[in-house]
Length: 457
Length: 173
Image 1 (spheres, chains in turn orange, purple):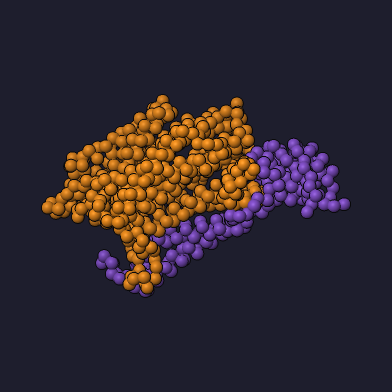
Image 2 (cartoon, chains in turn cyan, orange):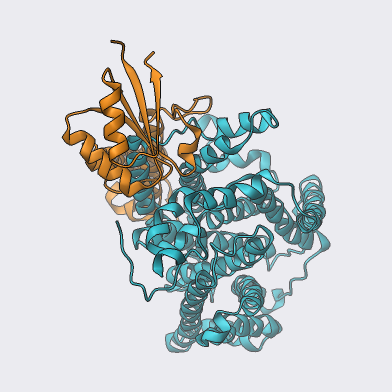
C-alpha cells in the first residue's frame, strides 16, 4: 500500500467509503437536473443558436460579412482559434503531465479537464473551417492524390503542420479520455436499474464496451494510460508550438520571434487552468462534489496559474527587450505601437489581467478563497483573449505602407461567432456534466487509503 | 463429483491481496479476479505476465515515423518538386527539417491509436460486448475471486478464513 505524509492535506474530505464515491459520482447522472442547470443550459442554447445563424450567414454570403479588410486579413477568427486551442491545453496537462509526475490531486479533476480540452478543441477547429469560406472543400487540407487537383499540400507550411497537430491532438485526447471513461461507464451501467430505465441501461452498456474489471484488463489499462500520458505530453507541447509557428515563421514585425513556442505554451496552460477553475468551481457546487474537488485542489491550480502567469509576463518583457536590442526599427515601432498606439487599451488590459492580477496569488488567503479565484480566473480568460488579439491585430493593422494603415472593427457576425462558440462550448459541457461520470471514480478509489481525510487521522 | 464455480467476495483490496497469495500458495488455481479499480500488486500476486502493450506502442510509433518520412519524401521531392520561397525541393536531407513537425505528429498518431486498438482487441472491449463479471457490485466496492473446483467445501473454508465476507457457489456450466 502506498503511504503519504500525514502533513499533506487530504484530497478527499469526510468519511468516504468506496461505495460513497460510487454513489456521489453516479448521482448527477441518475438524478434529475436542477433549476440552475436548466437556466444555464437555456442561455447557452440561445448563444449556440446565435452561433448557428452567424455561421450560416457567413457561409451563405461569404467572409465579407466579417470586419476584415485588406490590411487586417486575420482578426477575431484566428484570435478565437488560438484562444480555444490554448484553453484545451490544461486538460492534457492535468491528465498526462501530472500522471507522469505522479500527482494524485489530478484524479478528481482530470476527467472534467479532459472533457474541457475536447470541447475547446472542437470550438477551435471550427474557426479555420469557417474561415475557409467553402468548408465543404475542407478535405483539401489532407494529403490527397493529384486527381483532386493538380497539386499536393505543402508540407513546408506551418498552416499544414497545424492541420496535422490539431487533428492528432484532438483524436489522441479523445481516445485518452475514452480509455479512462470505460470503467466508469461500466460503474454507471451496473448502477442503472434495468426495470425503470431499459434504454439508459442499453446506452451505458454500449458505452462501457462490456468492461468487467478483470485483473489482466486493469494491468493493460494502467499500461495504456501511462504510455498515452507519455505520448500526450510532448504532443501537447508540440501543438501550441506549431500554432505559434503560424506567426513566428512569417516576417511580420511582432510575429517574427523565436520565443513564440515556449511563450505560447505557457500562455496556453495559463488560460487553460483559468478555464478549468471557472468550470469546476461552478460544477463542484451544482453537482455537490465539494468533498472531492477541495480547496486544496483549487489552491494547487492557482499556483500553476501564478507560475505560468509569471512565465507569460517574462515573455512580454523579453519581447520588448528584443525589439529594442534587435535595432530593427520596424520591430521597435511594432511594440511601441502596441503599448501607445490606437490599440493601447487592448495591450494594457492584457498586461493588467495576465501579469499584474496573478501576483495576488502570492497571498495564501486569496488563493484559497473560492470567490476570489473565480473572479481572477475570469480576468485571466479575458486577458488571454486580449493577448491573442494584441499579437494578431496590432501587428497587422499598421504595416510597412502608411497609406494602408487601418483599424479592425468586428461586425455582429464576428461577435456572434465568438460569443456563440462560448455558448456551444457550454452546451457541450453541460450535457457532459449530466450524462458522464464527471470524476474518474475508479482511479480515485485507489487513493482513498493514502490521501483521504479519515485515513489521515 | 461435478465441478463448481466458487465466488469469494471481499470488501477490502488488502485482504483480497493476502487471500490471493494464500490461495495460490495452496496450489489452487484462481480463474479470475474482478476489482472495481486497479489494485497494485495484484497482477504480480496472480502471477500474470507483464503486458507488452508498451513495446507494441513503440513499434507502432516507428511505423508511423517511417510512414511520415515516406509520405513527405514522395509528395515533396519525388512526385512534384517545387521551389517554395526560394527553397527548392532537390534532396530530402536538405528539406527534411521542415517536415519534422509532420513526422512527429504522425509518430504519435500511429502509436497512440494503434496501441489503443490493440488494447481493445486483446481485452475484447467493443460496443455490444457484455460484461463477464458475475456480480455487478464489482464495479462499485466489492472484490471478487473466482475459483473453479470440485472440492467446494475446503475452498469455501479457505476463502472464509482469509477474509471473504460472502461466498457464492454456482454449478459449472
